[in-house]
Image 1: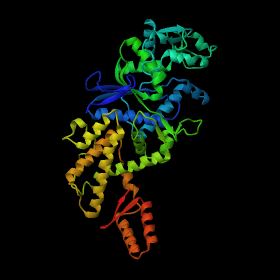
Image 2: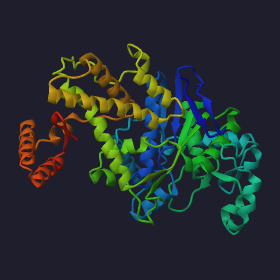
Image 3: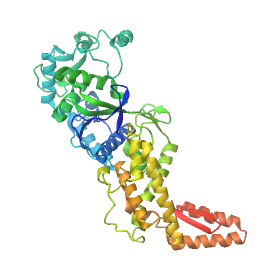
Image 4: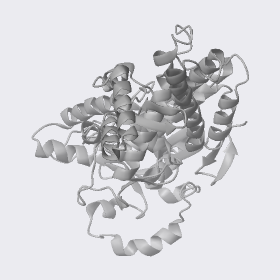
Length: 490
């Protein structure tokens, strides 16, 4: 069961082999902090959080770095509108980012470098590019000479000749920046200071870095010349990641990353999410509506990570129902463990696959799915199978006083479910579940069922249906059979 990944750079699925055996260096292009995080950010952060968790689960030591872009025109524009500063805007939305990610159960990265804290590394990299003939100064700006890098376009598959054919109509030759460039494809590494903007001193004069050079410098400073995984949204393939490769590899002569992984975009009701369409949804707006954060995680993980996903009311409702099924399985131990004679002091935490005590068919099937380019939807089928089996056994235990499966085997199934759910970052809150059905006790439910039975005997089917609907509204499902009526909490 070798882990294989689809590499955007090679356009094929490849066996995963790290630079250093047993260790993974992973970098995720994080957010530009000028606003609250939206559903697209939620998907990306959940996907790469679970990728990291899974790599750790199968035995890798992972160093995970995620940056913050805290120098950007959008940040400056917001600061201008709010009569604030770039630093104050960035700090506010970095704080909001951590609040949102904590609600979604995202593990914090090992480090969060910021562009403003990496200025020495940025300037050093620009200086090396200049010395090697890949960059040139122009009236306080510094540009990257794209045609000097023979591999330009290898990530996106774009060719300069093809792009040039359609570029002439979009170029404003009166633009001062265009006039400074030696070639229309060249991009800024350093921008001369404009009046009223924050600036840093440099060998080329006061100014600030371009966006692309920031990530190249942060990767190099925190992880070295070559990393194992460079991750981000598909919208970053060109020009951002293409330019990162050109900058970094021109200096080091080494691959920037062995594997380039990209998550698909999020649509809302079939349309691209945008403020102009009125379908822009932030993470906090969604969660403040009462949507369970674990349902959001499940919604993201039910789609292959590279494909687009469509956020609809129906999709989030289906994810919510799915989460209720898994949550019921996760809480099986707390609900029935003591009755089954379990030792609940063990088994309630995820166990790395390398430390599992014996061959486990569920874990083997889970890994077989996920090892195929992080096929989390396939892995989820194993969780649903375990959760539904535990729910079935719990209903039998309630109504018949014993289970069909031995307590020892049930405990192993429950421990496996807890472990695999932990890999996906799915966690059930016991307190929330115990408070959920405070309206009706077991005895009250049984009394309602007895009333319904009497109504059915009297052929008062309207009353029978009314009682069923009343219980359903309380989250109680009835199952009629030859042996009587069984029930379970949803």
